[in-house]
Length: 174
Length: 330
Image (spheres, rainbow over the protein chains, first blue to last red):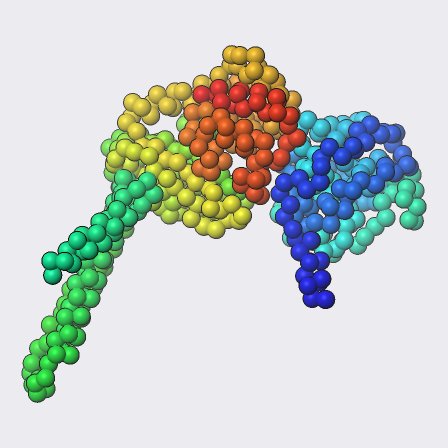
């Protein structure tokens, strides 16, 4: 019983430094990029791996800064790019859809990071973006911000359904 | 007694050989380290004299079988003992004071001009920038410090993430590198040679593999190295090198690394403009050979787990080309 509890806690903190899952898993490189797309991508086995691990989300926070996401999206509040902390997702709010958005780029300014980041880095960044929007389990995101912040820590952010820009929950959870 | 001599000689030899080396505070090659080593020897000497005196006194006391000493003799002995403590402490205090004054002034009293260097520590490597008032004379390197002999180098230290500590035992240190503020240290090398430095403040997973290589050379050699470092990167000469450069520029390498004279100008990872001229890769983890370079690019996370270089899904032919290109960047 105790051993089982320990192993649960370890999974959250495990530092997977190499790639534990094959990066060559076919991921949808071309999806419906129409704003308000409702069809969610098929679930990817990597989603749980990255979304449920504190180390990956922490690394994502670092990529978010180093790859200049801040320039357009600020620290999640949005600036010349859309906000990432609300429930509106023009191109879908599942991690698979966010990975596709970062990889392919989107019209009106979102560049493609396909040749600037490795797949691992993109998945980690997407997991952190989900954390910004309060989409992850509360024990996963970092409890302290690396930057100056007067907001609540991500661990206290209430979970919200991810909706597309029409206010429809594409996963039918609403 | 004769039989013991080889043993004593062997022990003494072992102790002395421990003092020499590329990473030893007891083998100073810089003013700061000389002062530290001198102070250490004075403390060792004074403490040794007192230890010897106490041991001799105890042996005499234990072997004595006569009547107790008179009041007067005891009083005299106490005066001598108290006096020697006062003298010993004065020597230590004065030695500390003059060492401290020496450390505070050696850089400003050195006659030659001062070299300015900025070191930014990151998990887990050293970003070294040679500063100059003339922007065209500035350049970056990584995990390597070249210093001209008998010239004071003023080193500004800061960190991008957590607290690290700068320590080149043969030359100077330690001095902490603290995120959000700048500390500094002066190095005045007094002997040429290669010396190894090491992060001296636990800074995460790969703290142990965060080394800094210092080369003290003659001013002429240093000037030549500096001039070479200011040059843009070597243009690829063979088809393989051209293919390597093209791969580098079109893949995630380009987002983090700079190669002077090309479109690669990332600032997250080490500057690779003259990587082939450096002695080691990954902050002293591996000697800089083509084989190690290929191994590192293929799987950096096995050689130095947790470091910031991601695993890239790279095909063998591409790996070979990129490694050849990087190995040509002399």
